Image (cartoon, rainbow, N blue to C red; front, top):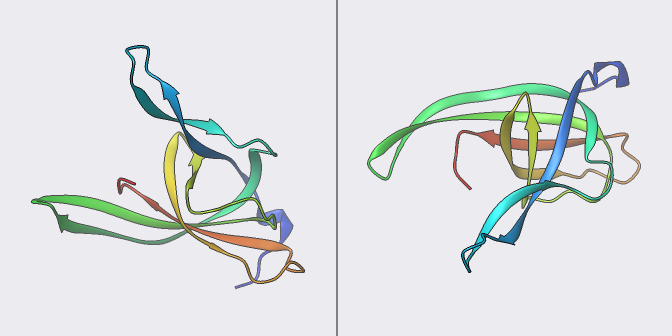
Length: 112
Protein backbone atom coordinates (compact mmCIF):
# COMPACT_ATOMS: atom_id res chain seq x y z
CA UNK A 1 0.00 0.00 0.00
CA UNK A 2 1.58 3.27 -1.06
CA UNK A 3 1.49 6.52 0.83
CA UNK A 4 2.01 10.12 -0.23
CA UNK A 5 3.53 12.68 2.13
CA UNK A 6 0.39 14.83 1.77
CA UNK A 7 -1.55 12.02 3.47
CA UNK A 8 0.37 12.58 6.72
CA UNK A 9 -2.40 14.80 8.08
CA UNK A 10 -2.80 13.73 11.72
CA UNK A 11 -0.50 15.01 14.47
CA UNK A 12 0.54 12.26 16.89
CA UNK A 13 2.80 12.14 19.94
CA UNK A 14 5.19 9.28 20.66
CA UNK A 15 5.66 8.52 24.34
CA UNK A 16 7.38 6.00 26.58
CA UNK A 17 6.82 4.74 30.11
CA UNK A 18 9.18 5.81 32.90
CA UNK A 19 9.25 4.87 36.57
CA UNK A 20 8.87 7.80 38.99
CA UNK A 21 8.59 8.15 42.76
CA UNK A 22 4.97 8.23 43.88
CA UNK A 23 5.69 10.41 46.92
CA UNK A 24 4.85 7.60 49.36
CA UNK A 25 8.07 5.63 49.07
CA UNK A 26 6.94 3.60 46.08
CA UNK A 27 7.26 3.83 42.33
CA UNK A 28 4.71 4.25 39.57
CA UNK A 29 4.78 4.27 35.77
CA UNK A 30 3.94 7.40 33.85
CA UNK A 31 4.08 8.40 30.19
CA UNK A 32 6.52 11.04 28.93
CA UNK A 33 7.35 12.27 25.44
CA UNK A 34 10.35 10.60 23.81
CA UNK A 35 13.46 12.76 23.63
CA UNK A 36 13.81 13.20 19.86
CA UNK A 37 10.91 14.77 17.89
CA UNK A 38 7.98 13.36 19.90
CA UNK A 39 5.32 15.04 17.74
CA UNK A 40 5.13 13.90 14.13
CA UNK A 41 2.60 13.85 11.32
CA UNK A 42 1.02 10.52 10.43
CA UNK A 43 -1.47 8.81 8.19
CA UNK A 44 -3.90 6.86 10.39
CA UNK A 45 -5.42 3.63 9.05
CA UNK A 46 -8.04 1.59 10.91
CA UNK A 47 -7.17 -2.09 10.42
CA UNK A 48 -9.76 -3.96 12.50
CA UNK A 49 -11.96 -3.95 15.55
CA UNK A 50 -13.30 -6.79 17.67
CA UNK A 51 -14.46 -7.85 21.08
CA UNK A 52 -12.69 -10.64 22.88
CA UNK A 53 -13.40 -12.52 26.08
CA UNK A 54 -10.37 -12.51 28.37
CA UNK A 55 -10.05 -13.16 32.10
CA UNK A 56 -13.82 -13.42 32.62
CA UNK A 57 -14.61 -10.15 30.89
CA UNK A 58 -15.24 -8.81 27.43
CA UNK A 59 -12.90 -6.15 26.07
CA UNK A 60 -12.98 -4.24 22.82
CA UNK A 61 -9.74 -4.14 20.85
CA UNK A 62 -9.11 -2.01 17.77
CA UNK A 63 -6.00 -2.25 15.59
CA UNK A 64 -4.62 0.83 13.86
CA UNK A 65 -1.61 1.48 11.65
CA UNK A 66 0.23 4.78 11.81
CA UNK A 67 2.44 5.67 8.85
CA UNK A 68 5.13 8.20 9.64
CA UNK A 69 8.39 9.35 8.12
CA UNK A 70 11.05 6.69 8.62
CA UNK A 71 12.99 6.84 11.88
CA UNK A 72 14.99 4.33 13.88
CA UNK A 73 14.19 5.23 17.49
CA UNK A 74 10.80 3.51 17.95
CA UNK A 75 10.15 0.19 19.65
CA UNK A 76 7.30 -1.88 21.05
CA UNK A 77 7.68 -0.50 24.60
CA UNK A 78 6.36 2.89 23.42
CA UNK A 79 2.88 4.25 22.77
CA UNK A 80 1.29 6.68 20.35
CA UNK A 81 -1.12 9.33 21.61
CA UNK A 82 -3.66 10.50 19.04
CA UNK A 83 -6.90 12.39 19.74
CA UNK A 84 -6.33 11.96 23.50
CA UNK A 85 -6.25 8.16 23.15
CA UNK A 86 -3.27 5.94 23.93
CA UNK A 87 -2.34 3.28 21.36
CA UNK A 88 0.05 0.50 22.40
CA UNK A 89 2.72 -0.15 19.77
CA UNK A 90 2.70 -3.86 18.94
CA UNK A 91 4.99 -3.88 15.88
CA UNK A 92 7.37 -1.45 14.22
CA UNK A 93 7.63 -2.60 10.62
CA UNK A 94 11.06 -1.55 9.37
CA UNK A 95 11.48 -2.44 5.73
CA UNK A 96 14.79 -0.75 4.97
CA UNK A 97 16.59 2.47 5.79
CA UNK A 98 15.92 3.69 2.27
CA UNK A 99 12.13 3.49 2.69
CA UNK A 100 10.52 6.87 3.11
CA UNK A 101 7.74 5.69 5.45
CA UNK A 102 7.61 3.58 8.59
CA UNK A 103 4.53 1.46 9.38
CA UNK A 104 3.65 1.21 13.09
CA UNK A 105 1.00 -1.34 14.13
CA UNK A 106 -0.90 -0.49 17.32
CA UNK A 107 -3.77 -1.64 19.52
CA UNK A 108 -6.31 0.52 21.29
CA UNK A 109 -8.26 -0.76 24.24
CA UNK A 110 -5.98 -3.52 25.44
CA UNK A 111 -3.91 -3.14 28.58
CA UNK A 112 -0.14 -3.40 28.21
